[in-house]
Image 1: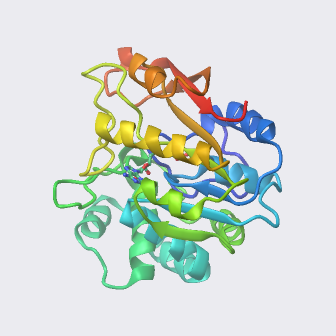
Image 2 (image 1 turned 90 degrees about the vertical axis):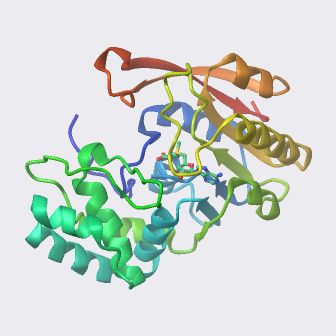
Image 3 (image 1 turned 135 degrees about the vertical axis):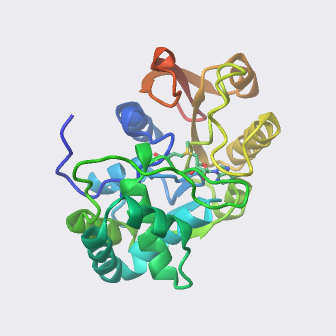
Length: 280
Ligand SMILES: C[S@@+](CC[C@H](N)C(=O)[O-])C[C@H]1O[C@@H](n2cnc3c(N)ncnc32)[C@H](O)[C@@H]1O
């Protein structure tokens, strides 16, 4: 598949990126009708937000984007506030890029926030599979990716991303706090770490915190609370009996996505997911 030429698009490749579900997600947003603010409390790569921006659906509308991953949020804020400085730093990384330089950058966390944001983008573009992984100390530890010609500095997209993020509220926050932000008539899209389809499919450890069944239950309570308050809520997750039970009071739609999260090739393929909503 060729690289899309339209901007803005996600500037970081993120585990659980929603590129494949976009047509279904867009249909759901259409079904929601008019809404106030847009909230994404597990923003990750932000596939849906950038697609809505590209389609002009975010014009005149405030977005609240959050995630509990500090490095990710710092990268968003860096591009929002200092895109040109980040572009310059990325050109510097590009000139020096090689395996030894990658490992030197991976080992060193700069004290300056803009340099940290550029470092996250550089490592994301050049690491194995673009997979963000942290060790027990919270340090990025994905190995070098052997790409022939990684697009380390996509200037055009970074500028389009900065424009899309211009008025957005971007915060490092746990998902529960969306309750303090979302008001009646707003729209919230939840894309949490997925409930594993089997005990061995433990691909849900996005960060050192993990996201277990207690967190999934807590999320379902937050979803129900938003529903009571008249907020339009949409959520994607894997189609498991546990998830279907948690959201049985709402509309569940089965959708299919091809994923390549498991390292064993035979486990790759179409995975059935659900979209849960309180407005369809
Ligand atoms: C499935 S990914 C989101 C993917 C995103 N929709 C995309 O298109 O790339 C889930 C995100 O949830 C974040 N996360 C995990 N636990 C969280 C929590 N308790 N509160 C907020 N965000 C959390 C992770 O850092 C990760 O970015």
